Image 1 (tube, rainbow, N blue to C red):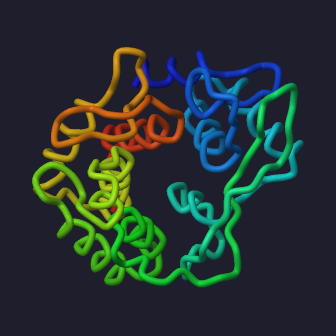
Image 2: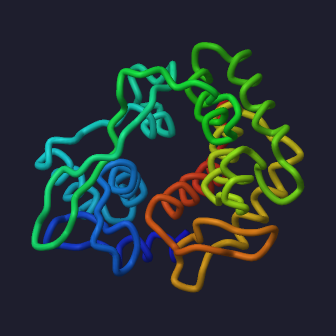
Length: 231
């Protein structure tokens, strides 16, 4: 976790008070990346966390409506709605972008492991039965290596962040499912030498770059596992 947070700290760009998507990128995502980074650095680098939050406010984007589910900060998380990716500003060749949730209801979201896990998180406080249903439906997509859903089949890789979401959801629901140890082992194996987490993998072979979003969610999952479980 120390190496993961150091990875984020080393990406911080003081010229815009934000983190780029990955090292060398000229794209800076307000949501999800920098929202997640602000949370990830709260304890160890509160100074950077505050600067990131101030930058979000400065660029006029303080919510997206979906990723906030991870921290129980989305006021109206469901039903899921379609989103669009939009440019917010350009600063000295750096493109500031964000995800914006639209008013269009998303169809077919139940096929995707990540959305099932987010739905489980969203239901956890008020509808525990629905939360467990969605969690179990996501669990059923595990094939021994990762969560096999339409996105995994299309791109022929598994997504690392879905491993993290599984552990985060299990913690929120107060569960300790047998699959958790396998998911945790897979997640740990995907941390790279620079401290960040690879975005994707094929069976056990890491693929893709280390980026902010994946690293932040991995850190959130590991942090949830080390805290006393709340019931």
